[in-house]
Length: 196
Picture 1 (cartoon, rainbow, N blue to C red):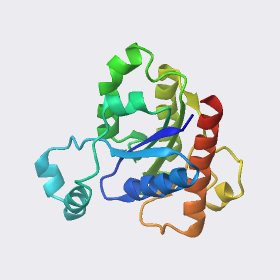
Picture 2 (picture 1 turned 90 degrees about the vertical axis):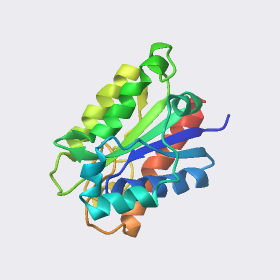
Picture 3 (picture 1 turned 120 degrees about the horizontal axis):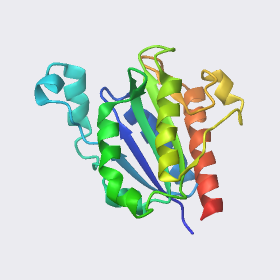
């Protein structure tokens, strides 16, 4: 059975979009069927338009489909990526998650492997609490959390976060960063294939 991976991201300025894109390539290379999807922008237009980088990123990614409950039913694995806002995932991702009650209610999110990534403006900007709080949601779904742990040396080279890759805004997407995202994604795909 093919691994059907929904990579759902929310990105204000493009960091989590880049992370999700790297993951999508790694997942395809590992044999998964991938849907790269974004959580809908819920911020008021005046807020978005007040920052050129935000507005420009929204325009640059306008052709990427918005995630739906149907995408979540289709998938047999999930990779979620969203920036940290005050120690939890950005409200746009939480708003998407809040639309999934119907799918959750009929068991459509259960028994699927899940992994997550995040970013923040600084190294200790809440990345770990963001990932841990999302994994509480995954437990409510009945999902199987597939964190990278310390299963590859590259985890130590990119900050040592065992919960999921976390990027500090403004840092380069180095080969080590791409390797860490790739490792986490392959681990998720391999786990999904075993479960499937």
